[in-house]
Length: 278
Length: 238
Image 1 (cartoon, rainbow over the protein chains, first blue to last red):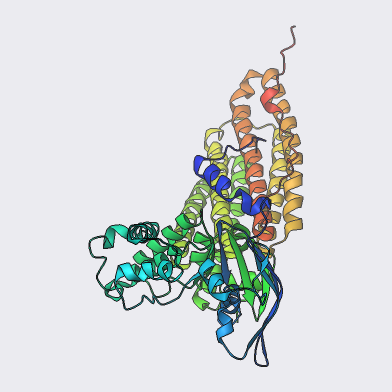
Image 2: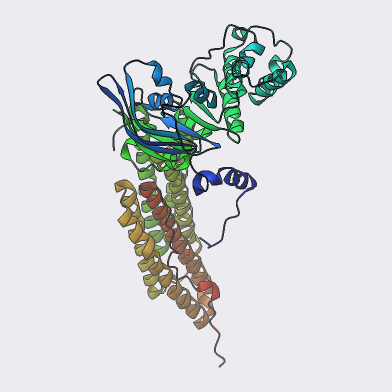
C-alpha cells in the first residue's frame, strides 16, 4: 500500500464535525452518573453504574431483558420514585446539578427530561391539545398565538406537521401507530426539554414508521441530548453515536457506537451483539 | 468462542470456512501444477491447470453468493462481520492466485518446442517453492486464526522480491548471451513476475487474517524489495 493520506468524503466530514464534541471531550457531559445503584426491595437491580452522557448526540443503551438498562433510563428523570420499593443510591447530575437533591422540583426535572415510551400513549384528546398540554401546565406561553406557534413548531420538529395540520382537532388516538409515536415525541419536545429519553420507541412500529422515527432522532440530535433504549442492534448502530452495553445489572462497556459494533473490548459485549448469548 | 443462538447462522459460518479452505487447497494445487507444466513443458499438465482454475472461479462465485445472502439475512456485526468480509476478500486474492498460476501453466504450450537450459529452471523452482510455502502457511494461519503465523508470511515476502530481482538479472543475462534464448526467457520472465505477484496476494491474505483476528489493520510499512522496475543491464560494447 502507498502511504497516502485519505481524503475524507463530504459526508464523513459533516458527520465528523457534528460528532467531534462527542469524542473530543471538549464539552462537559450533559448527564453524569457516579456509582449509581438501584434496589427493588432486596433485589440489587443496578450495580455501581458510572457513565458520562454527552450533550447533542444519541446514546444507546443495549442489553438483554432485565439487564437494568430501562431501570437506569428511568433514574434520569426519577420515574423510579413512583415505585415504592425502589431505592436509588449514588449520584446523577444534569449540567452539574444533582437531580436527587432534596430541594429539586421533580416536576421541573421531568419537564427538562422528556420521555417517549415503547407503546405510543397519546392523551385521549385532540392532536393540538396533546402537544399543548405541557406548555399549558408549565405556563410556557403567554397567549393563544404563542401556544399555536409552539404546537406547530413541535409538530414540525417531530416531522408530523404536514400529515396533521388540517386536522389538529381530531383525536390523537385516531392516528396510526407511527404517527402516534411522533405525536408523543412532539409532546415531549413542546416543553423544550434538554434531554429526551426513549424506551424502545420503535418496537411497536412497522419498518416505515420506524424509519421515520429514526430520521427524526437523527435530526433532533443536533438540539437535544437523546438517550435511547433499544433491543434492535441495527437500530442502535444506525441512530446512536455512543453505545452502552448493560448485562446483569452492570454497565459492561461504553464506547463509540462504531467501536462497540465493530470491535468491542469485552467478550460479553461481542457475544451479545452477535447473538451468541447462551 | 461461544456458538450462535441461531444454529443455522453458526452452520453458515462453518460452511464459509470450509469453502475458503477448499479454495485455498485448489490454489495450492494449481501452483504446483503450473510449475510442473513449465518445468517439464508438459501440455497435459498445463491443461489440467487450466481446468483447476475454472474450479477456483466456480468456488469463488459460490462463496460470493453465500456472503451476499448472509449479509442480507443475518446483518452480521463485529467479529462475524469481519469474518464474512475478510473471507470474501481472501477469496478474491485466491482467485487471482489461480489466474496467475494458470497464466504460468499456459506458457508451457508456448515453450514446448524450445530448448531448455537447466540452470534457468533452478531459480524459478526455488522461488515458486518459497511462495508455495508461504501460501500454505497463510492458509494455515487463516484456518487456525493465528496472527503470528500470518505476520511471518507478511514479513517474508521481501525474500521473494529479492529472489525475483536476481532471477530478472539472470534472465536478462541469458538473453544478451544468445538472442535465441529471448523467446523462452521472456516467457520465464512473465512467469517469474506472476509468481512474485502471487507472493503479493499471499501477503494480502496475511493482512486480512491479521484484521480478522485482531480487528486492527497492520499499520507498519511492509518490507519490500522488488527493484526490477528500475533495473537496467547495459550491453557491453565489444
